Length: 238
Image 1 (tube, helix red, strand yellow):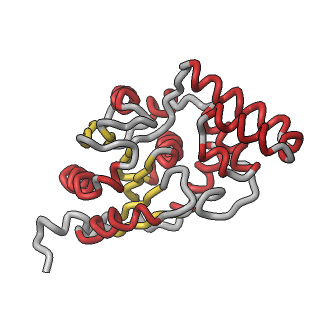
Image 2 (cartoon, rainbow, N blue to C red):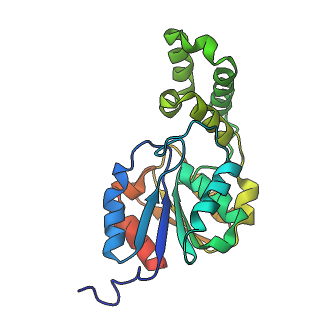
């Protein structure tokens, strides 16, 4: 039987927004560890990714979708977002703070970079979105553009989700981060190569009521590679 210290999650529900993925398998161990602490945990499926959708989505639409989803909860929840899920969670927290008791961001995206490589990626995604069907039958040209962009997720996405990705990566969430007022825990992999640690440090500065915890030796998916450490950080912060 769990002692009082272990029951840190009692009466706390954690809603998890996953990143840009089509499978939830990597969350299994992390969720199991949280439930061992008696958190009520739910990884919800995101439209266009783990939930089928033929629509093009943007941050405003995702925020309305999440607001509708959380309206079913009887009390405020702890909202946890990883990577692109963190982008959605941040935007939602800025617009609907009354629905959340705490925000947890793990290697969230949303900081707009202007490095040449990223500007080229956005440009190429825009080109593909505009000429669409004209390159559909040209595998060589299509693969060449994707290789230039160095974005496997974009290559594997449906046409509508490519438009969604283009819209998401074109948004600078700096104004949204500044609006977040609820307590926020930011968790970042020390060696994250997708969203660098400097992004986490900047998000920490932008969100006034926030703290940053760094997971040593971890990269972008610390919840998966260092599940125990990330759960310990959450446990000590709740």
